[in-house]
Image (tube, rainbow, N blue to C red):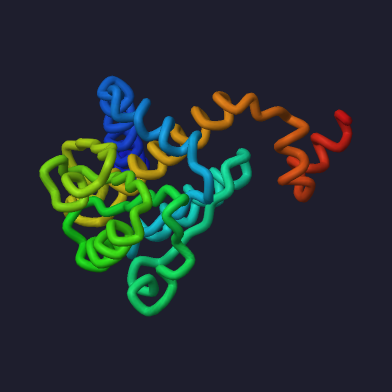
Length: 196
């Protein structure tokens, strides 16, 4: 029984990933173009599970040659939005596209004048409509038996972030030597040191 629960969850998420890979359109080209021409840093924001995913996206971008950092959406309205400049690009994550804390920072980013990339399931949401580019996704259900826990949705956000990071580092000609410069520690760093 337990193995079947695990298989069902994995199948659900795998199907969602396959579906989104077929839905990639010109909005991804626009997003990568915005990110690749960014004169400042990439700022990623979200709250809850989207916030956790946002931290990983910022870390992946940084380690693959695109300077990036995470700003918690709730902290942004208490001063942390002061880290955002007009020359930055801001990636905002919200599954619903209506998360109030994310919309609060969206309003601030609009006033600052930094370009905005939304990652959300709802193309008609406030977040999607008020962003320069909306990377949207769809899925049948979350992976848990209640269909409530952010599982499949979080995985899709993460996969979209990974895809942006990979596309950017390929576009920039990011090499093993570059990766080693930013990642000299751990088993990956050791493996690259041995090759040098």
